[in-house]
Image (cartoon, rainbow, N blue to C red; front, side, top):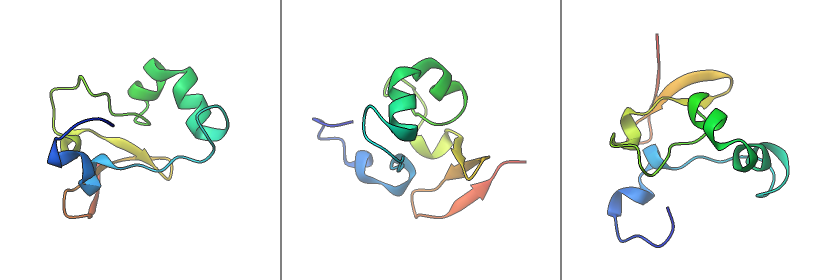
Length: 76
């Protein structure tokens, strides 16, 4: 979410690390397949009205919630 003054951008719940660059590895796949990446929890879109801490993300093959304090909460 570059170019914003929103302080929530740097919270742990809004930070994810993908392998590769914008064209290789997981990062490349996400950039080429944004709709699927959103559906599978690899990408939290800016237009999503929810807070990042409320959006399930894929982590180690499981959907989880990333908390603002850095904790991870499994879903289900």
